[in-house]
Image: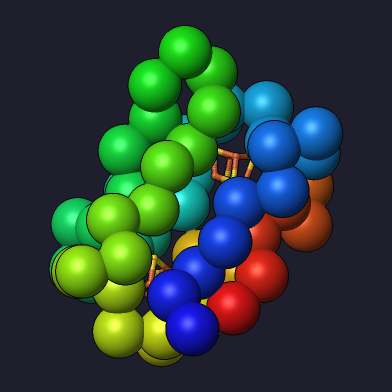
Length: 56
Ligand code: SF4
Ligand code: SF4
């Protein structure tokens, strides 16, 4: 399954977007969104998020 953002925990900091090697994450209206067609489940974003707001 592609990475999933827990919206109640995401603060829209954009760190995950910067770390994603597939450019699969965009931040819109202070929440990260994952393009499931681009995500390869590498989990970089999971480790990068300071709020534990992404799971794979
Ligand atoms: S799991 Fe990897 S490819 Fe998928 S959104 Fe996170 S950093 Fe990007
Ligand atoms: S790193 Fe975490 S808190 Fe920051 S935008 Fe991504 S999911 Fe949201």
